[in-house]
Amino acid sequence: MNSYNPIYALLIFGLICLFAYLLFRPVYGWYWILKNNWKSNEKTIIEDILKQLYRMENSGLVADTNALTNALKMKDKLIIDAIHQMAVSELVHLDGDQVILTREGRMYALRIIRVHRLWEKYLAEKTGFDKREWHDRAEEMEHNLSKEETDRLATDLGHPLYDPHGDPIPTGQGEIKKLEGVPLSAFGSDQVGRIIHIEDEPDAIYRQILAEKIHIGSTLRVVEQNPERIVFYSEGEEFVLAPVVASNITVAPAVHETEETAVRLSSLKSNETARVAGISKECRGENRRRLLDLGFVRGAEIEIDMESPMKNPVAYSIKGTSIALRKDQASKILITKNG
Image (cartoon, rainbow, N blue to C red; front, side, top):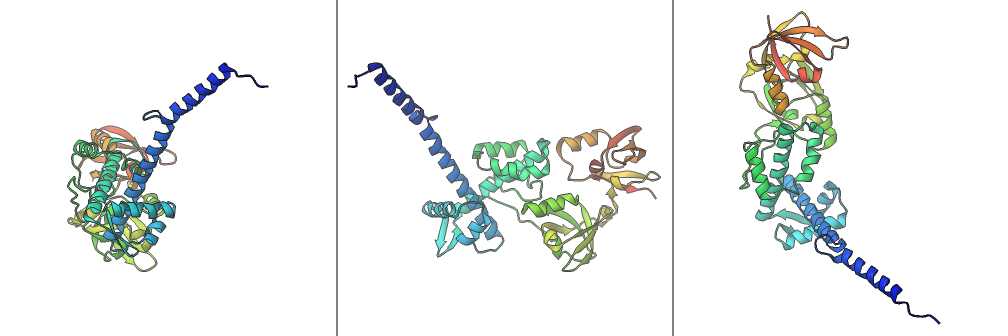
């Protein structure tokens, strides 16, 4: 016959109370954490869909559920459930299988894009993160900044009009400039242009462009254009790209063709002298300020002072000082070689 043990019963009751406290305590209880995480995930999914819809509509593409499920790396059911929730909230309008942004949905999408592009600008100007990391880090932050925090960020950055890739940044009122230019793949041969935008998606093509060391703001001249390849000269170097890669680079006609004579400092030879023509827009923030402080200003005389065995780095003589630069750094300084 089992006897009643009050200590054992009290212990069981205490464990039940502890479990209930851990499960339901305000804010930090497991129930509330899971619920808030679900809300956060739902918000992220909706915002990702809004941004994708904006891109597709802006490109003249028809957006339907199949196109969205193919474009977004999420489970189909999550996307479909989120679309129905967005329709209820009047962020989208459903026309059969087609998903169309409402005015409110478009404004919401532009707010997300604004945060993303401002954060990329912040990473480029204020941090030392590699450009390959900007997009993914901005993807995380675009879901976390409030409107007030976004406005403060824009003010701290001086209300920039473009992000580091050349994409226009929407204003707080949802206004956005149109990108003036054409894809490099459609730019006329023997025409001088300037790179005004480099698309950072898809990632594989963007990384190929980075590997070629093609810089935004650079002047170029297309010399060959056919279905197999695009050949152009920029800053004293030849580049060969497949049309699918070249289509992710936007070019506008250059205003001053004389700038085509500028080449990269990395091309300077030991028996040559030159003058600094400027610093590429690719060099930003603290790195740009440091080069200017070291004397790499327009008109400064420069020549090679000393080369390492592998010619990387190279020491350059400028304003009576020897400054060692890696090839990657020297490629961002433009020069005009003396006769």
